[in-house]
Image (cartoon, rainbow, N blue to C red; front, top):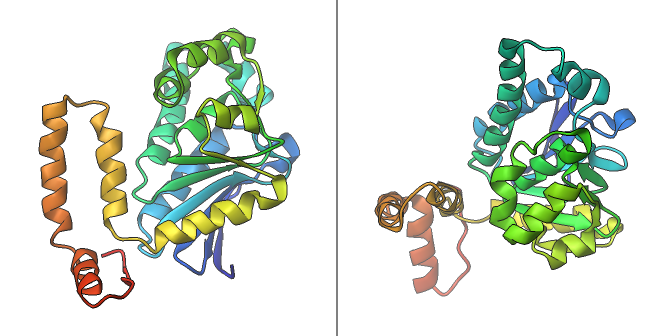
Length: 268
C-alpha cells in the first residue's frame, strides 16, 4: 500500500498509508526497540498525532528490525529506577502507565504485529492493543519477574486475555512462548509466517479503516465495560447507540441495504 506521509518523531515513526490507516513503528532497532524515556515521550506524541488526524482510522503497531520491543532499556530505564527518589520514580513509572493508557484509549483500532521479541514493557505494550497478530518466530514473555519486579500493565490486562492460571504462570516464571503457543492460549488472535505478518495486519487495518464510525464506539464500550456493572454498561451502550444512529455511516448502511449494494463508509 502506498505511503502518503511519514512523521519521524525520533524513536517512533507514524507512517500514513492509502486506505486511511497508519503504521506506528517503534524505531530503536539497534537495541531491539527497548523502551527509554525518549521512546515513551515520542509514543505520547504519536498517539496525539493519530488522535487528531481524521484520516487515520486504524493503526498497525510494530517494531523496526528483528524485534517488536525488548522492554525497558537496562541502561536508561531499568537500572536507574533504584536510584530515583519517590518523586522521580512516580514520575517515570507514571509516564509509562500514561503510555499504556494512551495506546488503549486511541479511537482507532490498534493492531499489534509482533515481529520478534516482545518482553517486559514490550509485552505489556502489545497487551494494550485491540488485536494481536504474531509471527511464528515471535517470542513473548512477561519478563518483569526476571528483574525482581512486578508487571506494569500486565497485572491488569493479561488476565483479561488468558486464563488466570496462564496469566500467573507467565508472570511468575517470565518464560518465553512462541507465536503458535500464544495463539493457542488466546494471547494473540492469529499466528502467521513471518513473511505474512505485515500483509495480514495491514489487510485487517485497511478493512477496519473502511468500516463505520461505530467501530470506535464498540472499542470504547468494550474497554469501559471492565469498570462497570452490567446495568451501568447497558446504560452506557444506550447512550453510544443513540449517537451512532445519528451518524452518516448509519444512514449510508441503511441506504445500501435497501439499494442492495455495499456501503461506502466515511467514518462520520
